[in-house]
Each structure stands twice: as C-alpha cells, then as structure tokens.
Image 1: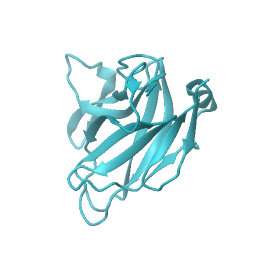
Image 2 (image 1 turned 60 degrees about the horizontal axis):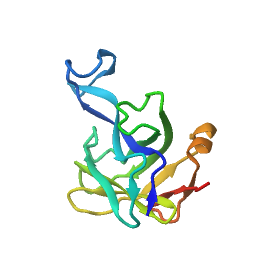
Image 3 (image 1 turned 60 degrees about the vertical axis):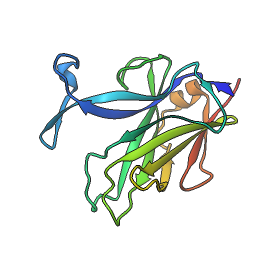
Image 4 (image 1 turned 135 degrees about the horizontal axis):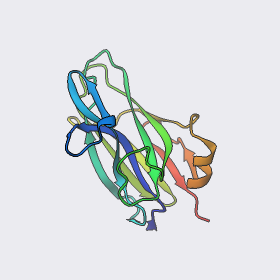
Length: 171
C-alpha cells in the first residue's frame, strides 16, 4: 500500500442551495439551478491506498443525455487539503481531462468513475452505471500546466484505451 500525497477529485455540479452556496457559483442549465466548480473527492490526502482496490467510486450524470452526444469528460484536480470544497480553491491544481466516448446505441444516463491504486500508479476507469460496460476513455494531458506536473510529481501511462493510469513518483 501507499499513502496519497494529495487529494484527488473531479469537478462537478450539484443542485444549488441558496443558504449553503455562494451566489457567484450559481449556474442555470436546462432550467435548473446548480452550484458550479464542486470538488468531488475520490482520494483523500494521506489516505492509505491499498493495491488493486477501487477507492470511493461515484456515479455522475451527464448533463446532456441524448444519443447525438458522443463524448463527455471529467476534469481531474488535486489538492493538499483533506476536504476541498471548490476546484478553484487556492490549494487545488488542475490535473487532466478524462475524455469518455459514450456508446451511440443507447443514452447513457449515469457514469461510474473510479480510481484504484496499483504499485506506483492510480488507475482511472469509467463505466456505464446501468450496464457495467467499461467505456473507452483517454487522458488529455496536453493542457496540463507544467507547474502542476512538477508539484504533484505525476506521470502518465496510457497503456490501454479503456484505462489509463497516473504514476505517483516517489521522491
């Protein structure tokens, strides 16, 4: 096992609650009110990561559920905090974009995003929550800021088209 040197999560929206969320976070989509920029945590800093175990898998619902949409994406972030609230908090750093190809035969209503630790890498996998089918995903790391790569000590391995891994480089 290893100890996570930062928290890992993805950016998401949640229903907007006026008594909880700052007004500048309000985003209206499809006539509904959402709070934008939420850090949805999958791994907590200093958490023990046991090898080959999926950590804190979560189900997400694409905003556009129509067969004409061919892909969706998850923006991954890291944080030095235990419980970051928003992805633009000072302690958060953009990590990468996980691009997910959606099946064209059915509407994908929900996706399961999960992270596992294998030796020195975090493996990311996205599947259709209804069928369990692993979806073809790719990591878009060309837009990662160099300071993020250096500060998080990460590397990328795209060994399979349905999975990718983020290497945690021990110093």
